Image (cartoon, rainbow, N blue to C red):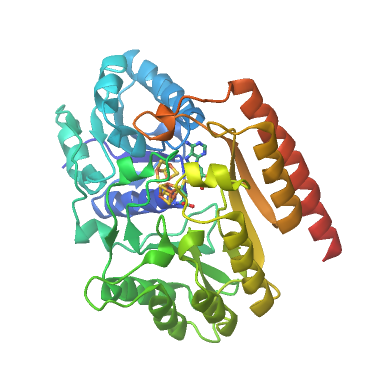
Length: 390
Ligand code: SAH
Ligand code: SF4
Ligand code: F3S
């Protein structure tokens, strides 16, 4: 038996992390632990971390610091750090140096071992372990996640792990590893289980298929592609209150066939997130994105033609190395031209180990911030106009 009974998970980052936190929650509950009401009233705090931008990292480190101080000052607490930040080269060492009383550090590939690590921690044994390859762990991977109380009608299912795209600014391939596609039968059985548990609810439900680049999905056993997977899954939810969506698509793999399929399938939500990242071809090339602004536009023009009620959202990075005022003007024009329903706009953040970090012509912090603020303002006006026009 373990004496430490209650846990609290602090989640940072994307839906992938939200979903993995739900699985940790489910796993720990099945082992007899209870979710605490708050961080202040718990025996165990688990930080499920993100490292996509420096700001995320700084925020998390300061939150860990606060909890660590309480433990150092005598609070009886197990502290665990898991996920993308701890998976980064050298981070577990530097965390231990800064916060010697941490009990557990696991990365993204061995997050499923959190249960055993907590058992060890209750016997005062530390588990500081980062591995290079994802350990497939059916007991964890196939767990059906419980509802997220803040978004009880939104559900997630992983279809792929990792990313092979190596966009030059991005740390994700380094911390999530090479692409691993789940088998369609596994996805299907998790989907059916989930759908059965939500199909009688009154409110409309939405199920997201998750991956870093969902439209490059290929089932390792059957060779079925992403459209095949969507076709199969949407068959189960016909005429129900559930809709399917997916995060994230990569524009280079967003085909006309996929647009046609979405148009033909009312089970798919008319809300497509398609990150363009920048509006200047020179920068897109430096980013290694594999498409031009024209390619992107022709894809979404086609999608809008076959699916007129679709809403398109995107991500944009401002101040990538070498981005001149003229290049930035291209992004402003692109945003004015495309009229996204919403855009998540962030200043470029240097990530050590990535190709863009080694580029010589880095943009200063002030300029990156100013461009971001300007673009957010422009996009906000566009989003408001669209909403007013509806
Ligand atoms: N796989 C997804 C998103 C992964 S990261 C995709 O390709 O769309 C989520 C978003 O964070 C990205 O779309 C990008 O806009 C942003 N991002 C990633 N690395 C960044 C960096 N170094 N600086 C600023 N934003 C970054
Ligand atoms: Fe990062 Fe690019 Fe992979 Fe998305 S597709 S996770 S932006 S490397
Ligand atoms: Fe962050 Fe990892 Fe997601 S770095 S954005 S939590 S994949």
